[in-house]
Length: 232
Ligand code: ADP
Image (cartoon, rainbow, N blue to C red; front, side):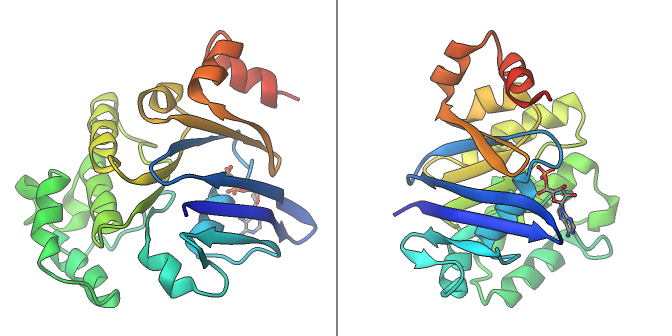
């Protein structure tokens, strides 16, 4: 059970965005995916969600194959993509109903999710009228709409102001309880605040994978570790 990734390779033309990546994640782990821009974090997350297909390797989610049983694996995963793509002309509820329809889900959950992500005071607005922090809440709302066991969050606090960062971080901590989470970020405090394990990617390869305590024990700070392990 959990997520098992073996021998994952993804090429864009001659470039290997992922190069023979293997690791597994137990149910309930909160894993921080770190690495410089271009390391392959988004590519890895998109492969796990089934949004893109790898060239080689296998991914299993709760014993289902992402390649052969994509409907089963997609049901289990909530995904907040990089830059949180949303339909700005839609109202919040309209958008969540739309997402729910596509996935043939129960509409009753929409109100519960609006409440859970703290969208209630802004839920009458069009998405385009919301602040960036509230847009991010809409992105998180669609990710947890089906109450998935797994959350994959690609830079969920990118571009937010410091208050919004703390609010969204608290929200992730709350909604990530009892879920398996993979989260990519450039913010070291975020990793320290949320994650139990850190996987560092560089140039499409895993260069470090350890519990956060070990990671912190080896270096003065996560910034120091990041710099030492990824600087050319
Ligand atoms: P990260 O999320 O760590 O910044 P990405 O997974 O977005 O890294 O990108 C890994 C590498 O693959 C980068 O060099 C990027 O330019 C390249 N890449 C990503 N998506 C595409 C694409 N659709 N076409 C061509 N190259 C891509």
